[in-house]
Image (cartoon, rainbow, N blue to C red; front, top):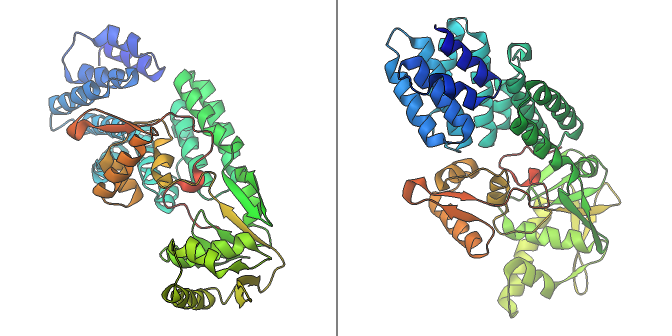
Length: 406
């Protein structure tokens, strides 16, 4: 490898994309094309970077499997940045295996880190944790160590382990400082902002207040019966009754939880659970049926007592009931939670991350665009959606597939 290629590679490792381009901008050999692609990616021209890496992968011959694997690694990283979640994970796994068998342990470790990032973005928290479980952090350069610690923090945040998340973010900040890359340090600082902004609201006894993530963790560890409107379930002391697929029952449970220790009038329950504008005997009959179903579902945790004017919730093994609500009640909160990372998402990537159909996501995005909460750019397959990166509240409890606590 000639001196210009080595110098360009070192410049890229230090985050000096322009310095790297100055050395290889006029060259079209395979190594130069790969370095130019990585430099263009660092400068933000991701489409040009993708094209250069494709050319580089073709230019490397069939005997240069390691070089082609490194190109695949760079292409995977660009796919993650552009939120191209349809990019085949098997290709990245093949590249990782090739690099590992060739003794390139640093890039093989980086591949595992990219696999974990992809898994975390799509809500596969367990798989992401397994992907980096035995990864030797010492194999990674400072920039990759910082990115890895961001993944560790992301996993901890999804599981509401705030102490572990804070420790990981502190390690990420130190690694970013060591790398000397300003954009990476800014990303770590933005991630740390999550821990110091409201993550939920606590509703009970006629009042409500915002909660930080650490306070949410404390509430979930308390002895109270919790009607969790972030996960649509009812929980107490490790026992959990999920009502995520039974929205009417959860609406009733939430109404009873917010009113506790008082009862809720039947007419109020009809409006909240069924949206009834006028009440007749058929509505009252349906309410009795749904209350009966809710009684059965909540049998391990609570009883529902009939009163003269309605119904009241009575916990079985505790003297307190609270409702844990989202920081902002939003019809399309999960979509906004993903867009809040400041990146540009395609409709297909959002659908994949949320486990919904693309048509459902298109309708949601159109509604949000009319309200001025998101903004599209591009046309056809290149259309992407963005929103302002600072929304005033953290979205850790709105992200897909966060594990239930307890």
